[in-house]
Image (cartoon, rainbow, N blue to C red; front, side, top):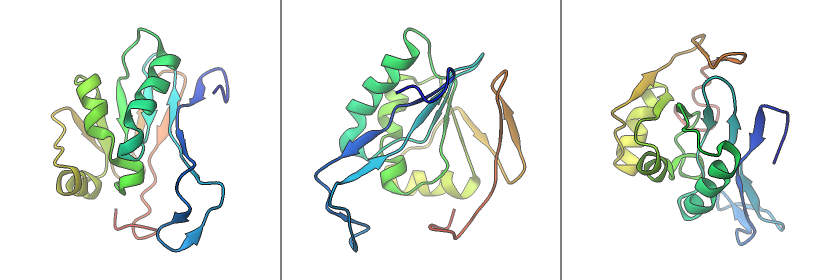
Length: 146
């Protein structure tokens, strides 16, 4: 779904989930948000819940065509945001995973994924994609430790 000419939504909807975080009713289900930024370099922002990995990868492929993502930005290691990282790396093993030190540790513990191509970022770091420049903001303990 096109948000702007260069930012597209590639997330998925879970219409079967009726209780978010085991405590909040979500009668219409919920969305696992993920976005692609199309620039000189391509960044995919977050992954999705593992059971939706195949659909998510299909959404990405539909938006990028024959290009290859340069980066997978992992903003949060919780499973509904990160449990499709392994599937992403199986599809695009040369992509660089970008995240914080704490998130990388959690990804390894939770999903047994230890990306070879990785970029460690901390609060205030930037990443240029071409016309877009991403600035990383650390926000530990807002929801999860990382």
